[in-house]
Amino acid sequence: MTTPISIQRLTKRFGATTAVGGVSVEVRKGQMFFLLGPSGCGKTTLLRMIAGFTTPDEGTIRFGERDVTRLAPEKRGAGMVFQSYALWPHMSVFQNVEFGLRARKVEKSERRRRAMEALALVRMEPLAERKPGQLSGGQQQRVALARALASGPEALLLDEPLSNLDAKLRHEMRDEIRRVCTATGVTSIYVTHDQKEALSMADAVAVMSEGRIVQIGGPRDVYERPVNRFVAEFMGPTNFLSGRVVESRAGAILLDTPAGRLEARPGAGAPAPAVGQTVTALIRPESFVRSESREGPNVVRGRRVETVYLGEIAQHTVEVAPGVLLKRYEMNPRRERGADAEVALRVDPDDVVAME
Image 1 (cartoon, rainbow, N blue to C red):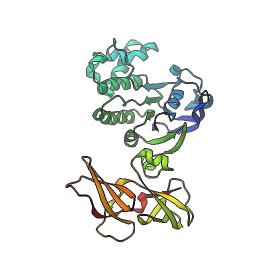
Image 2: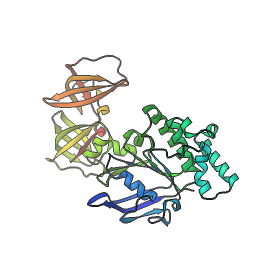
Image 3: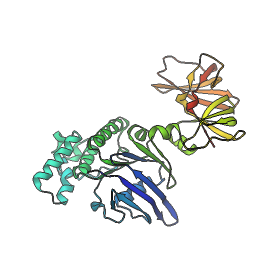
């Protein structure tokens, strides 16, 4: 069984420090919901309150119709996957997975059935008799995931589960965790500081800063339509241009910038700025494409001053005005391009976000 989760005005203080300040979140049944933010933003404290390991000072937590705010962790019906795996080294894979069921005094044959089903779900059934020390990091995390799912939890809580894995394993386990959560339909809340994890796995993302949620939306929303500069920079490399509004109408803004005149769109949930107002235009490096024409709407001209080869992409630095540098990504670069080359770049108005 899986359930929606409702968090209302949740607050936690440690002395004079407010770790989580009045956070409210609605997680839909079966949704994969990510808490994303830098270290110290309060995301793990929030997850620990949902799990029952930390007691909130204010606010409520509901799993479906049940108020679980003051319930012990084992009575909440949530499965937990830890960063450190937390497997018993002296037990076999099977024994680790069935441990929670044994503690609940589930009958032996039923324990075995549910533990083996969970191991099959994460493709670890053939290694059921091995000890954790005989497994790779990725395999150990699969076992930890199976253990959390074996009890049929109402919710699955994951605390930076991939941070101890190397880059290749992280990529593989992102796909694996997403597959398992989709297959089971379990409501899940996943804490991470890794933007790629959130963008590739989440149904919804809450970006946190200083104990508060700054923006909630789908992965594409928070990446392409950030509400402020913090979200924009945290979600990935970004170009910022100061601009003055010369025309403003519903859904379209015309800006005078050091790179020339650009048409832009307002940020998420933001009203259109007034004519004469100074705003900041956000443009992601991958939004620029080469333009055959040196003139036209949203065409930027400049001089390429540096190119850094990064494998599947090349990162170009283009000077569009004295001291004004923009980054541009070129996918699948086929040949080296020298510095000091004059370039013309075009950007779609939908990829230029105007924010205060």
